[in-house]
Length: 100
Image (tube, rainbow, N blue to C red):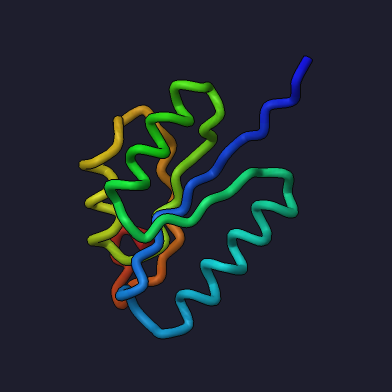
């Protein structure tokens, strides 16, 4: 039986919050890979949506991570099917959604 990797997609918003956000996204990606997940970072929400739907159809999508602020999380919540796990990796200025 072929081993199917769980796949995590990261939606990274390079304009969110501090300039150090890109380094934190890279660290998150490395940690997920070290934990045995396949992981891709997307800077385009349209490309991320296509990847998410393809991986979901293959039964390989574990989660989508919103690496940005409240706007990034809101955009993903409206863009992706509601049954997909959406995790917050707050990199914005306020991060109200992650705080509450």
